[in-house]
Length: 357
Image (tube, rainbow, N blue to C red; front, side, top):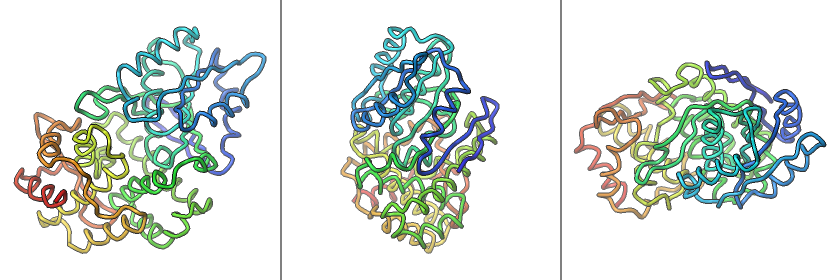
């Protein structure tokens, strides 16, 4: 399956499905890179080696740069190491960076590609479900600040995204299931048919059925492509993709990134729905429906072990805040959320305290 993402920063294909890696050679033939560096992490280095072997030729001899499989690899220190590697390998403006891994690798490699020589080609090869449905598409690159997640970054669209579901075979089951938090995000915030599909096919999807999975990845990728086309640089409508991320990112920061992104987003969606209900914007049924779906994908309502005050202190530092004002994304009904809501601090404190109790 293939879709096209069309933005002012570039138009590019997203290839999705079993065996999609076969599209990498034609992609590189189109780009004609003068050199290639594959960026990966310790968890999926074997995929990087397989890819390097498959694209190696008399003209092209790819190098591999491996980082630790940890959120802590999204740092300025890790970025500096990768940029130094690109310099040592003499990657010029005709070069290409291939990101083989999850969101951490994609964000780090993307930022390096966008800044090295003011920009070289980037190809995303996501190996996690979370990256396939979300972070590999849309051109956001970043590393974390000391206290803020994704605080330092750029907008840099890839030349192609190749999401081969075979790569999910090496993904630990826990991380696979946690990624459904991002899938549920799309369903609750903007796609009721997807919500219904997730409920109907939960057993197939949890088991990793390739046909059901391909359909869901395609739905999420299409939704994101449409949003990015309207708002590439995150000036308004793209904020819908932040559903669940305001409280979620605060939990990640408060835990010093020990709480996984998927679990944090699931927590953040619960908080957002409960705030919406507390403000009279959605019914209790919406809160319960979301809860039931998250639980079906192994994301039970178990509070992360983080200090309440630290989470509350991190919320005003949300990178989308303006003049200290946080614009919350809140659901009105299943399949429709609204951006830019101002929530009274007392409501935020009350809901988060209860959620973390």
